[in-house]
Length: 178
Image 1: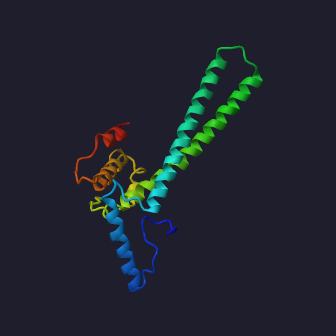
Image 2: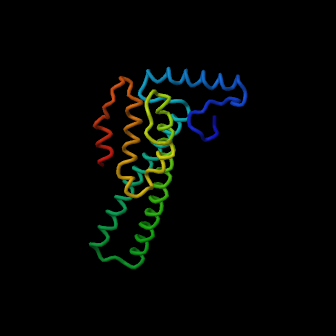
Image 3: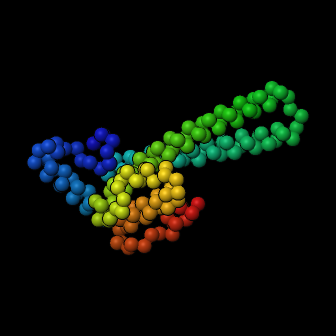
């Protein structure tokens, strides 16, 4: 389904046949769980792919910004003209604006994936401690954003662990600490 919802099978849910088809699709999706860490239906997989692409573009652009800042630093140690200073300022302003736009785009793609992954927790046999809206909202609530997104990530990790181990990987702890 391209309705923007996470992991909802395309069916006519108003009919009994549609409901049965939706339940059958859910049970088939859960069977896929045991072959990997996360239920990767097409919607979740697509969201993960776009989040990774956005993150990669953002990282590449950070390298560009680094070298632009280095060029600015080198300019400071020379006798530069007003035209050179203005060109440098324009370049830095453009790079800063593009970095901000890429940050917003990357955050949107990441949050769409994060919410979708959290919506899958119960389908994977795990337990969600919070509603799926908190997967996005928790990032924006002051003070609460210091620990709630990590708790949600822990729930995702625990539910997607194919071994049934309830311990959260040190990778998740390092990610949150970074």
